[in-house]
Length: 115
Image 1 (cartoon, one colour):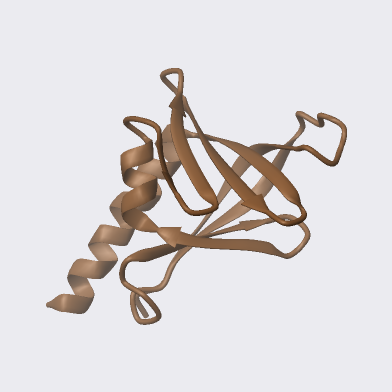
Image 2: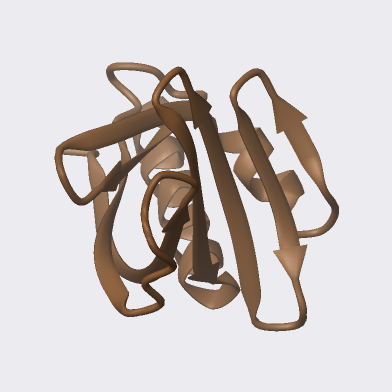
């Protein structure tokens, strides 16, 4: 099976709740059989976002956005992923190393599928 799933700790801030800076678990998921160009981020409360793997990768170096998702580096060790929906905005701050590790694993899984 070539699905890549990785758990990470994140800080989530929304515009509908008080600023709770406690780290929460998020799930990073890549399924090349479903869509080899997309990654998914699962937030607590059964919220899941699917967006371009390339967007995530580019956002680790410079601010980028596509549709309802924005990604940008935040200092040397953090990255921010911002999700917009009719219900509000969720801002998720993650460690860049965790995202880079996840991306490496997705490319290795993709290479195994195309071999």
